[in-house]
Length: 199
Image (tube, rainbow, N blue to C red):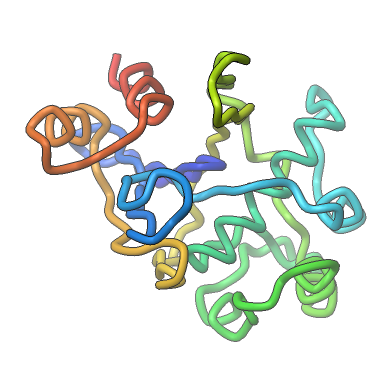
């Protein structure tokens, strides 16, 4: 089945794992035009959303908050929602996701939307895959965990067309080959993560 990474969604096809990537806006302040995994930063509200989120026994508090942020970002950017209905345990449907507001999820809006629909975030199904930190002497620094989770059945990624464009499924090895050929620009952490996945 397909998989979502905090910065990534993957699919286990007959040819192997595929990852969901999108192209950043050409006007983005960081890595314009680069192919990336969906994701972003942790909001204060992600901590509060734990009230409607699952947890693995081995999942730390920080990992759970990161997982919730990953779920929210995948929802905002690609309309993918890792959640289930509390009433019957069934996965959230594509129709339910389509009826939600992706464009204004700041503050508590995302958790409130889910709670109002009786949805529980599947943060226990999100796992840390890699963690990258830039050198402290670089002018632009980041400290980014890369998370992975199975893509929900029946949902189709739809880019927000403001931050992310052109969602595509690609095998890690194929993405790396296209990058080498100059037709699939990616930044170093993305390349290294795909290299790790391709082995």
